[in-house]
Length: 149
Image (cartoon, rainbow, N blue to C red; front, side):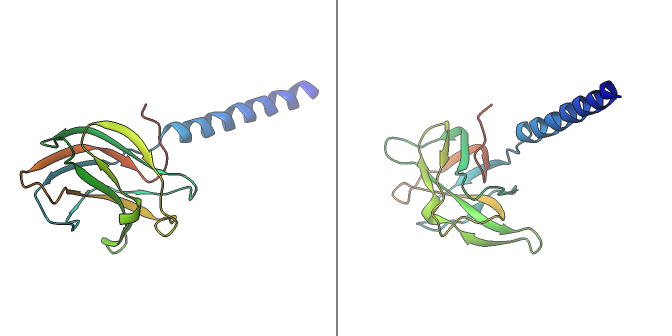
């Protein structure tokens, strides 16, 4: 009887461990691809993908896989955008939680306290308003901290 109980306990523990490990490894990486022109300081380009923020304490993640025409100090400003998937509308452009990038790479960015919520997020981008050639950028993002792996 003891062996049977122990066996059930070990099987249950193993299954629970696999479920937790599976959900941690399965973080989404919504993609973005922007072709940007100079729009001043307005954000007019939004990703077509989004994901839900799960942890208020986590920073958001950005991985830029390619960026073209960003030179010297000119670059692209990326910001998270609160998004209502029921209405299909952007709720808030979180400009205080943004980051400038002029090269490829991975990183996390802290949310300003006024920008963080357990809701869906898209990604918005604009190029430096002092530069007039077209910029292109692509990669992935997540509203929470996600590894680069």
